[in-house]
Image 1 (cartoon, rainbow over the protein chains, first blue to last red):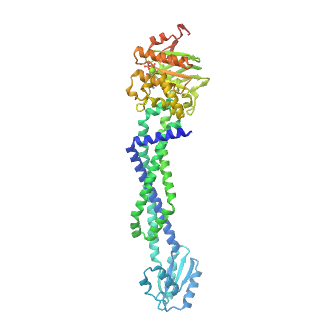
Image 2 (image 1 turned 90 degrees about the vertical axis):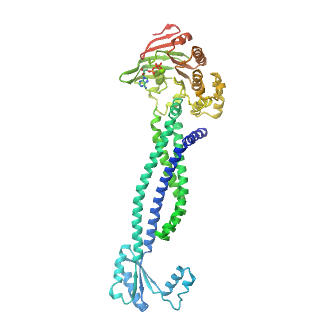
Image 3 (image 1 turned 180 degrees about the vertical axis):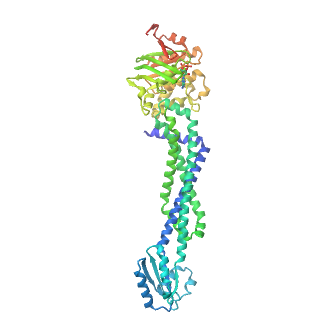
Length: 304
Length: 226
Ligand SMILES: Nc1ncnc2c1ncn2[C@@H]1O[C@H](COP(=O)(O)OP(=O)(O)OP(=O)(O)O)[C@@H](O)[C@H]1O
Ligand SMILES: [Mg+2]
């Protein structure tokens, strides 16, 4: 195909789009909404599952020791725990290290100064990583035995588990809703675009017939409608991307409040690093729907 | 050049538009197909440009059976044939010039070719002065000329005109016939379907008379062939 033909065909497609601009607008908007919904659900699922694995890998049981416990008692317990098959790793955290971590975490200088190295109230602890998150309970139960109560000050693992359970529940919910909404909206947008293109084809039925009778090739007839379809996909993709940034901006305080700053940070990071991928996905979905609808609608007009 | 062999066209069980038609048209001929309304003239034209397929029989054009043309070959075949449709089939939202240029654009013609050919062909049919008008602003005879111009613009080997003098007054009709005659003298086969027997008789060229889908007579300048 020559450049002349390509430019002629593209012009025809653009003219079609413009002639039915209100319908075209409706098609574009529906497509935009669809792309937005698909993207949001894909991104949400990915961000949440990434956060889950991140927290999962961090998850551990921490045993804090009373200051009265001797170093010998602690290292004995450490060996016993390290020998367990369900334990992946045990790390001893001294008072000094605990203080260092404390200082790193606190940004407020006044709070930092509350604890002085000479007078360190932070307990020594063992950080235990389980092979499977499910084993955490057994390990915690083992540590909770009476025989260790003289030296153990506190065992903590519950907090993280709750977060994980919450995230897992959200993930599966989001996935389910994602599928339902995405499919519904894909169907709606296909129907709307199909009808828009059908209408354009219908208003140009005469022209198509004449084109055929004076010897236009299938391509010449088909491509303008495909161009129109692509245009819907392309515009929708751009609008959706812009809308996405707005949605994320609006969603940030909400995710911060309900899912924690890790999720929010993951989300932002995800959007920035995967921007091109997201755009490409929207572009491909949009254009495929557009082209599919065009080809489907024009099919029966090409048989003469 | 064109050979129609045993062609029948049945639209539905009751309507037999063409019944075993045999016709041979040579290079450079001017053939008028005459018959009453409903005789099957338009059907024959539609078969010749593959708008419809015959129920049975062969249509050979330049040795090729066009009945068996693939869908993808059709456009290239149609570019070799110019058709003037009974209902003109001009695009109302395009000007005269655009309507004619359209037929070239569709065939991947270059812009220079379009710029060069379209005014010349409009001049040939005497419509250059109307080039910026819309079809709605034209009279029947003028539309007819535009339709002829469009059919001719890609220099087809065969020009098929269905009812080219349809609802024109005798003077206009005769002008169109003269135009077709001139085109024929430049080497194009012209096939003219019409119910106006008087006008083709005056032309003194080959006349094929059809009735109820069969050929009644095939007359070359007065002498019967069949
Ligand atoms: N698409 C169709 N479906 C069914 N019957 C048709 C169709 N086209 C034509 N016919 C029938 O076939 C017969 C021949 O029609 P055709 O159009 O060939 O006549 P014609 O000679 O061109 O008439 P006219 O001079 O009025 O144009 C008519 O009886 C007509 O009703
Ligand atoms: Mg007719």
